[in-house]
Length: 222
Figure 1: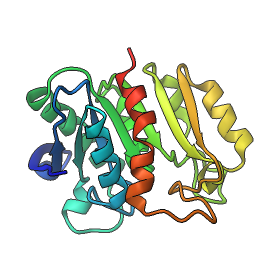
Figure 2: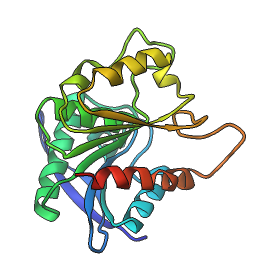
Figure 3: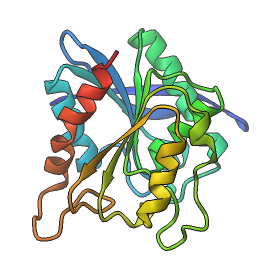
Figure 4: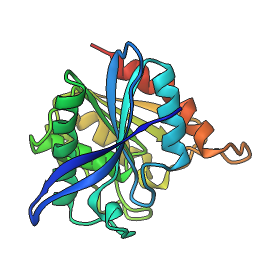
């Protein structure tokens, strides 16, 4: 499906800038999802493209966008303040182009930055969706990224692969979910951090599209 290329103004601590976005409007849209990429991939990654197309088919409009480090051609994420400022710019863009409630979603890093922006009161999405929340670096459960999650009052959906090293050990992840005010988990049986399942190879766009019904149902929730 075709998407409209857009520019999104972002007020960074170092000054104003713009980042690229892709707007996919669904006819008679029932909800809008702002969809951020993970740390190692931009907004045109096949996983996000497949998810977007399937969400639009479900009647959900989608705004994909990049963080400033990707816009600048860098590979490593910049300061968290830059990502939070980008989420603020996305919210302002949506307020003008698609006013009404929206859901903030993101793959791994992008979803975590949405949660930080929400916990700090910078953005106010109706709901949050994490596509593989990176609770800690693989093998480093001693460095959890969890403190802010319990401060979030809006519903949170964690879409998680059962074999994701970013949430192992499972007991720790379960404790985090229990500490949240309003959170639920949708498990992908046998899935890793990219939702790939050993012995059942599928293209990334197909994997993304397969998550659309779950995300759409949650996005439409009251």
